[in-house]
Each structure stands twice: as structure tokens, then as C-alpha cells.
Image 1: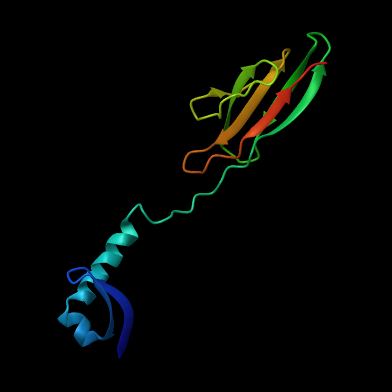
Image 2: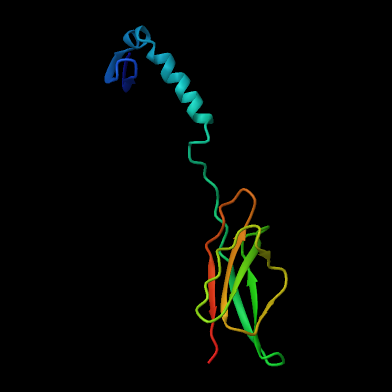
Length: 138
């Protein structure tokens, strides 16, 4: 049985190709290869698939009583929580929401110009894309 793999000999700082199990064992490379593979498989350096939370979606309605806009946020990922940030002023830029930002629990009433950013989070999942809504009044 032949073993073909490119293995770096770090002691000699060159790359060689092992042609047989016998020469691999002679150089101690077969054991090194097996140990490094087992260590690498438990290392956090390997990419781990984590599902991504769905981005929050919004709906709105005009609140004639207050003269503002009511914003509802919802996320289709079960168990996810939505957090948001707000910046006041025309052309203002809100910071990106983190899991420590304000948590969305009730509809938001917007009566001034500004920017709203929302993002959904769930433990063990990648955070969602950021929803950005700009509010301007004429």
C-alpha cells in the first residue's frame, strides 16, 4: 500500500513526499500527521457552521393622534430577540445594534427625524443582517 501526501519536514525546513508507510514511520511523520489531525479536529480554528438569524422586518402606520409613525418590528426566527439603536436628526447615523442595545418589546412611536437600526440575535446563531430605516419629514 502506498501513502502519498505532501508533508513539511520542519526540522529540515523543506517539503518532501512520502512514498511508503515504511519511510513515513522511519521519519516519524505518520504519527505526527495523525496527532496533528486529531488536534486540529478539536481546535477552535476550524470553521463551525452556525445558522444565521433572519433579518428583522418592519411594518408601519401613521398615528394621527400623536402626529408620528408607529413602527412594528418582527423576526421570523423563533426564539430570536430584536435589539435596536436610534439616532436623532436629519442625516444622523445610528450605531450598529449589539445584544446589549435596547431590546424591542413594544411598537415604537417616531415623531422626529432620525435613523433606526435593528438586528436580531439568538444564542449560538450568527446575528442577522441590520435593518436600517431613515425618517425624514417635509
